[in-house]
Each structure stands twice: as C-alpha cells, then as structure tokens.
Image (cartoon, rainbow, N blue to C red; front, side):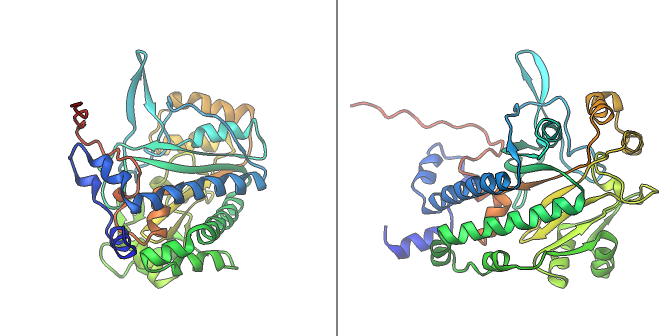
Amino acid sequence: MSQQTQSLALLNPPAVHSSNAPDTFVTVLRSPWYCLVADLYDVVERTTGHYARSKGLKNLPFPLTTRTVTCPNAFGSDSEPVPVTVLGVDTFLPDSMQFALEYGCRLSQGGCYSILPSYRGETPDETHLNQYTHSEAEIPGDLDDMISYVDDYLKALATAVLDEHGDRIARLRGTTAHVEHMAARGAPFERITFDQALRIVGDVDGCVRDEGSWRTLTRKGERLLMQRVDEFVWVDHFDSLAVPFYQAFGDDAGRTARNADLFFGLGEIVGGGERHSDIELLRKSMALHDVNEQEYAWYVRMRKDLPMITSGFGMGIERFLMWVLSHDDIRDVPLMSRLNEHPTFPDAVTRP
C-alpha cells in the first residue's frame, strides 16, 4: 500500500460499526487505521500503569460482574445497568469499577487503579459506546488531590503518545498540535465551578438542561464552555442531584457535590469526585437520590467500619483516543465492535 493510500485510509477509517457484512473483521485486520489505534491502546495501558505505580497505586484484580451498580444512580444519568445471569445467579456487568476500587483502597492504602471494560445500557452514537475501556483510579485524598493526579496523568499520556507515535499521527492525521498543547501545559488545567459555567454559557439556548431540582450542561454547553474558557477545563461542584449519590456534598446544605468533570475535545472525557466519608451524610444523600440503602448495605458498612477520605475518577480510553486522532465518531475506535449488532458469521473457507 502506498503512503498516499495509507494516508487516505487513515483520514477516512472504514466505517465497520455500520456494516453487517460477515467479513467486517477482515477489513479491520487490513486497516492502517486500526493498526494505529492498536498501538495507541498499548501506549495508554503501559503509561497508565507506570504513572499509577509512580504515585504509589497498585493494580488489583476485580471480577467482571457486580451486584451494586454505580453511575446509573443519578437523576442526571441516561444510562441503565446491564443485567446478566451467570450460572443461574442474576447480577450485572460493571458500569464502573469505582466501588471495587474504593474497597481496594482499604487493602492498598496508597490507592489502586484498573483498566477494564465497562458496560452501559444506552444506544451508541458518535460520542457514546455501550461497552468501552475504562481507565479508573481511587486515591486517598480529597477532590483537589484527584484533580492534581488527573492533570499529571493526562500530560504523561500526551507526552508518551507524542514520543512513540507523534510523527506517525501528524503524517497520517494532519496534526498533533492539540496533543502538544496538553503535553506542554505547565500550569494546571483551567478550573471553574458549575455555577460559574452556567453564567458563562447560559445566554445560549440549549446549553443547560434544567430539571427544576437539578441542572447539568448539555454537550453543546460543554463545547461552548471550552470555546469561551479554555481547550482544557475542569468544572466542579455540580448540583448534587445531577451526579451519583456517593459524591460528597460540596456545601452544608447538600446542594452541590464535590465532583468534577474535565472537558476537552468532544466534551466530558474525565469524570470524578470525592466520596462521602461521613456515614450519616452518605445516608442523607441516598435518601435525596431515592436510593434504597439496603441494596448498598455493604457500602454503608464499609464506611462505618473503615472510614477513609478517598477520591477517584474514570476516563473512557476510546474518548481519549478519539481526541488524539482528531476524529468525530467514537464507534470507529474499538478494535472489536460491541454495538449490540445482530451477530453475523462468515462462512468457513471451503476446502477444494
């Protein structure tokens, strides 16, 4: 394949996510786009482990089923848990390893991390997958500690991507300027409160979703905020009812949460927060979110018997790579499609 043909193939990756052809996997295996994506996944995995260990975190083994789901438990969430039956037992596929990582912090008190699949019951589109690769970590410390960890983590990822594949990305995707901006950023990323964000973008229709008791930013609002503030911007202290119950309260009244989302590229790519360390405040939050405490009895008990102040985050690796590759459809990133498509199988090669 000529260099010009390779460039065109990468600039226009094969839309395998929209194909029902039984030999789609062959297209992937022959695609220069997916060769590059595979190499970038490897960079992210290695760099994540090296960075986490340098900060004292450990990688712990966790199961790929869970009895207690995390992210769908917020009024602001549009996703649902994914139920499965394993050996006759009803359970769920994990939507996050956060609860397991909080558990792990009691065993590895320097913190822990994981890179594992997460599953969401939602319809995939240009910026959402229903199965994706999740880079997550939980550390001892507060919200500020988590934000500092993520700032340096992303700069380490950007530096590694440039060092190992910068020339290749620039040649075949046209630019690495955005990755260079992240890697070279000396100061922390910009940081504003949710209330400040609303004042910045609230003059434009469609930027804020207001449900009366809680508000959140739409994708349009996230992107406008980046245009008006900075290409990398943290937004913290969302309305507490717009985020999951486990995020600590950000004020005495419980109106806000000690959470933060980092916006760059398509919008929100990293989400995280500080956890409730006070068991009564956790119970208050569960009541406000209409969460049945009995379904999370072990989580409450862990807080009671082994209290810790911890904070954590999750980043969808496919979203990060979509940004690295200056691409506009996340469904072109996974090496193996898992979009709930109807299964098709190629015919076996017929022997003569």
